[in-house]
Length: 83
View 1 (cartoon, helix red, strand yellow):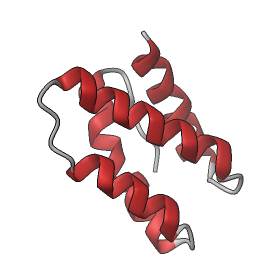
View 2 (cartoon, rainbow, N blue to C red):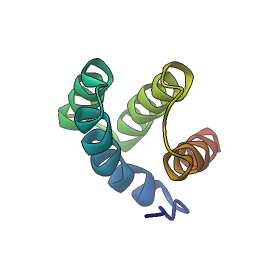
View 3 (cartoon, one colour):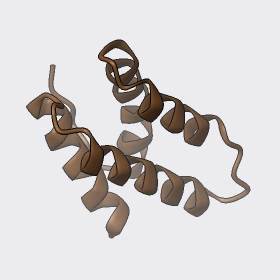
C-alpha cells in the first residue's frame, strides 16, 4: 500500500491509516497522541494542520521501524505542512 500525499486534505486523510498502523504494531502511546490530535476540535484549519504537523514530526522522530511507505508519506506530509 502506498499513500499519495499532495494536498493538506491528503495529509489529514493519512492520519487514520497511520493511527491504525501504530495501534496494531505496538506503538500505543504514539497512536493515542495522534488520536487526540485528530479528535480535537480546532476553531481554525491552521491550528488543526499545526497539530498534525507536530504529531507527525514526533512520530517520524521516535518510531524507527515504520515501513517505507509510511516514512515516505510522513515526509511528504511534513513537507506540505511546512509550506
